[in-house]
Length: 326
Image 1: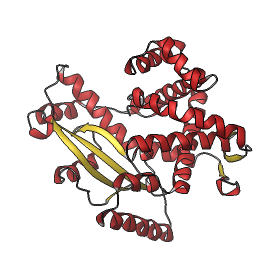
Image 2 (image 1 turned 60 degrees about the vertical axis):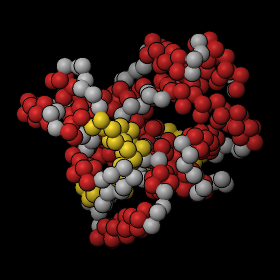
Image 3 (image 1 turned 135 degrees about the horizontal axis):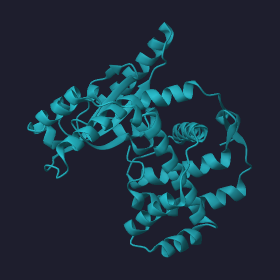
Image 4 (image 1 turned 90 degrees about the horizontal axis):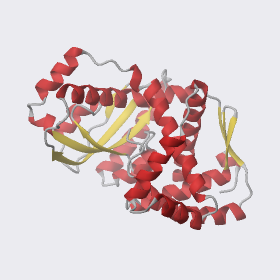
């Protein structure tokens, strides 16, 4: 959910990828690789995003040897971005210049640059590089606003849930945070027996490979349908009250480096890995407000994948990736 964090890493990835895109744009013949409702995704756009994804995976020290699988995953991610942008437009959501400038300033400060220096650095790498970054940031803010409207704002937190949170705050688990990685294999809302068999076989094969020592991050990039697949499935740090309820029991069984059993819930099959855990200090924030925020995050995490699946199921999507030359 922290879409606007880690701008220093994003900046580095952009710097590395813009020049490569300039070369590609001059040598590739553009073709349509996907139709998303009334919009299209071009081969040049896909290749730019693919290059950026490869750079970020290298920064995270995640091998991306299967280029075809990564290209398909990047395209899927781009399709979901398009769908969210289209829904935001239908909702009449807008992003102001002040909101974009605030994020650009944060990005500049994270890299110890002034805003002018940031603009100069990006424009040196590619014509209109700064303008391109403004566009990307605007799209990210717009999608976050959409998620707040369609997911987070619909979440109701009860008084009992707040009271239970406060009571658990005295327990050890309430003062710990867990860094999780995640693989999701989603299932259709009403799968046929054949689809169930195929999905079960796919999940069993993935889990077997993980047990035999396959790299979790690489498997997430290759197979996961979760929103964080292109980061190796890394969900970041969550406390006990922020993680999806169906994760909690498994997480408490794990030690850092261990992988959960396959978790079978309506959204699909989930596999999680506990990357690390740490103790946290008591927040100075009012405990009741902290409780409400944590519960909202947890419920949003539980429903987000279902919301994304419905968004896709309602759309017209024509993938033409296999009809073009890589």
